[in-house]
Length: 337
Image: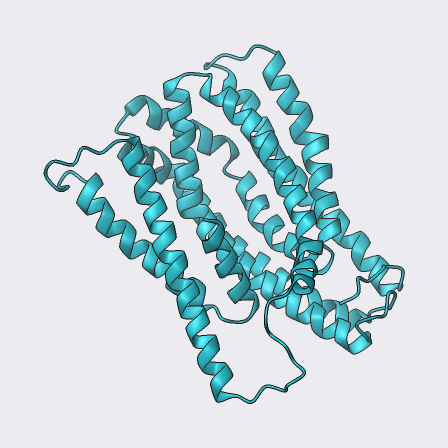
């Protein structure tokens, strides 16, 4: 998984979206083949599907897809290098200095992910303690969330992140890579943030109809199809109808957060810490101490998860506004590139 994500993100940032497309296509094809061979009702005779089988299937999908993408990327890059003349002084070989260039902004995203996932695991442990039906419903809810809602959101996020990053890089080159303070014109600022705003509008156009469809029709049926449990499907439908609207905020906040991630990763960490420490952490403490039961657990969990999405949206808006104001007035410290 780490190799797959690294290759996909790196090649997408290098304007080679064909590599992530190849990785996803290979993963999809391998997943179908292995599902039919070892998981489905028509699997190979003598094979008994287990939890380990599921894990091995996931490992095989990720490994084959990531290696295929990496080989494809190296092959195309090598062919391109042969067909184009590269100046002798421009070295493209990996080095420790190049690694440090990537590590510096990566430290902020690593810290953000560590804090967010630590709190999430704490909450999930409480969800599992609520019993099999509630835990299964949460798993099905996440399957619907990741399988339907997150696909267009993440696709738009990747496009916005690359586009904002390129626009920011072009502006930084125009003012000088070693300049630490510079004021951006309003037109330049609009050019930097335009991809994120466009992605936000597209996300609204996609997510609103999808959320309405799932709320009024699809959630319970889809949940029953996955779980084959009437009780679980009703719990999932309740979960979805309670916080479906908050995922509209999530879709937009994800696109707007790419402005911070592509320009000031440190600020991206700060806004995430504000959201997690000011909303998720206090409610996680409440959930773990009030003695919730399966009957009233979702009343608390909906506030934690749904509320955090709404809180993050306004948090990101405020941080983006502060950053834009400081950039226009020339008060923002620019990292050397």
